[in-house]
Length: 111
Image (cartoon, rainbow, N blue to C red; front, side, top):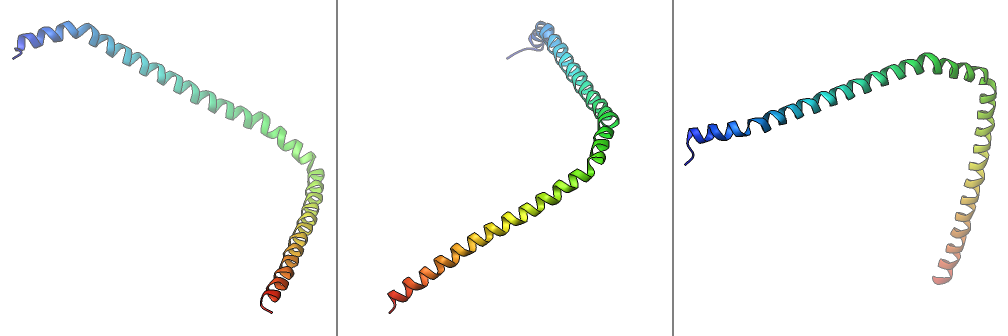
């Protein structure tokens, strides 16, 4: 059985490594906090700068190009509708053709 005196001797012997472990843990924690805080500040400041400097310029460019963008959108939507109609027409005609063939085959089977 271990005596109280032996326990005290073991704790005293381990004291330097315990202190070093605490120091390392504190150092790592502070380092993480500093990196995290710096990162948050950089993101906040970058976001603020982009909102103040870049966004207004982008909006200005969009407003200046508004008529052209609307025209492109209208032309694109017209083309998309045309392509969809052609595609649907082709798909429906194929289905009808296959339907006619099935009807012929079934008619000949059950004659």
